Length: 518
Picture (cartoon, rainbow, N blue to C red):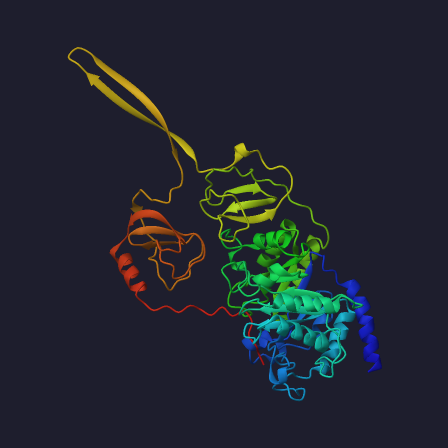
């Protein structure tokens, strides 16, 4: 026990100086849920290994241990499920509780910390029984977490004398009520400690996050691991300005977050079986991550779900770490504001780029409003920028001038006079279609299909274009998701398909991000 305490003390002094939260090339990988084992139940060789197995090189910097999935369980104590490594079913629990005794992991935690990595405790998960009913309850729970896992003391410490480096909020249901009280209490308890404790969160990429939005705006976080998967704003939508929204998270970090130095990570599945959607190959992920690193000062690195999947997928974690390191772990140079300056009152076609307010923005669709960080606005921030913008005269616009000639004649028995007059008219993209064309090759709208921004459908003999991701929202309905491109002709077969497609029952897919595995 004395040797363990000595190793613990040594690891604190080393890890606190080795891990640098200000870097741009950190890699955080969740451990604890054996995601690979859940997907490939017979391939036991690649099941989740002990934590120390993943600390044998300098690739992974942060290990959020997942999850404490019950806040107030049997005996009022929390519970924890680490799948095939430690859980309440297969392991001994502390008397009168369902909290498993995972003290055998103490040496793993200390080993990882001694190598300059931080190990934090993730609370929640997709199916966790979590949340608070009052500030008093949140305060009590903060003291419990401090005593059981962090710098406090208790006779029921699941990891023995090992002291974790902070907490992570992976709250995927309910509200963020009272979580700010919880975080503030932990910050208060840690204020006099001899080591640094980190507070992170893992919001969904949809902004603002339904479960964490309130607490993210109320208290300071050191980093957020944004889940760019299982959502329309996932990595699969990187090329779509109407969906990809890392820029809005950067804007939040630098203008709204109480901690203006908070780091924003790109959260990704470590393989195609680690999530329902959002996985992209290593080459695409490398390109996206390095581009975001060079475009936004809040970028902190990449988060992956999870360690078992990353190792089985040809060490995708190592490939990304190498790419981020090559892009530079320190220092940020703002890109030039290379797009034309935004001009108020101008109509911009979808895809147009402008410089405004320290960002380069791209129009999601036809846009006339001023660029802002509004997630439902017309613009998407594609890069931070600095310096003078291109002169406004170069601004792309859909506004154009046409000349119309009208000829009038006056005739008498002896003379004929012809007068020619001209007038100028302005044409812009209109929300009211006036032309009729063909819808050949365009499918009928179906309430059972999820459409991404730019998708086209036929509905009520009109051609419609989706402004952003949508499902079940009827073209022309109150949601305002579709742009009416005008009446058009379609074959009888297509119109028949439209009738049948929209009279069938629909089932929306589940969007759970992380589930518990044994």
